[in-house]
Amino acid sequence: MDSRKAFFKNLDLSQVKAGQRLFGSFNNLCTILKQPNLQFTPTQVNDEAAFILELHDFLKSHKLKLDLKQLTDKIKNFKEIKVEDKQKETKSHSEIHKKLQTNFLNNQKIVGESTEIDKVFSRAAEVPDPSTIRTPSTLKTASKMLQSFFDKHKETMKEPNEKFEMDENYLYLQTRLRACRYDFQVQKIVDKTLAKILLINVQAAILAKDRKEFFTVIDECTKICQQQEVGNIQKLRFFKVAWHMGEGSIDINGITADDTVMGGGIAFSCLLCEQLYIKIFCHFQCG
Image 1 (tube, rainbow, N blue to C red):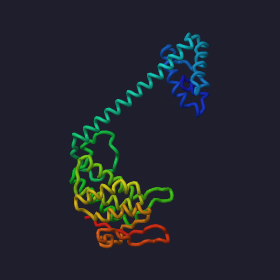
Image 2 (image 1 turned 180 degrees about the horizontal axis):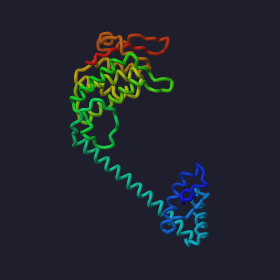
Image 3 (image 1 turned 60 degrees about the horizontal axis):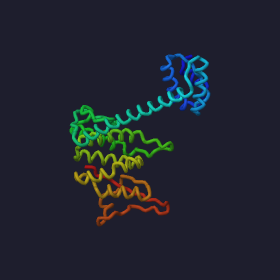
Image 4 (image 1 turned 45 degrees about the vertical axis):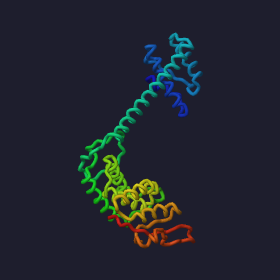
């Protein structure tokens, strides 16, 4: 039996965490004493003072002379060194990440080089690699592909099931829409293609009843669509108000722009008061 197995032999689950911390101290002590094969099986690890007494008796039984104060100091010093090392490591990682992020946001402009049309979203840990970021023309092609996929599956796109699992076609679409948004963001590109990507994103989130995704993109979508003169801005504002006003069902098929906008205000298509929620039938023009 090696020293680690011997150390944890009599510990139950409630003692493992404390045991892992104290095993580090014990292992360091074995190195100092030049006794790498010592097999100590403690029973008191949740109480550090009791552990030190138990370890002191164990060392005496192996004729290793180390008084109680020396033993306490060595374990304490080892703990302080570990904490200090951890703090330095955390600070170093934090400073590197902050520097990379600051340089990227303030000074760098990524120019995409990738021509891979289909791409799923994965969050970058550091500055993006241009070879993985798609060119504007590739993003335009990708947007057409995603629009086609959405048009094909929107009629059958389902709400989450009883296990809160999202529709497979929606998840396929969502991961690719996020990847497109990311590629636009890191290149600081705002154009009609991005507006159309965001419109697909909003519609898909409504159909799949993905509240979190909807509120992540609705404001950006409204702003960019207004700038690029794409889509119907009144409807986008209407969708946000509608979702806020009762978490009712929103169907993207059936209402034209004239049905929803009256004198600059918003008209509800149908109020189902007896059911205490609002049912809204809406329709997008994405081009």
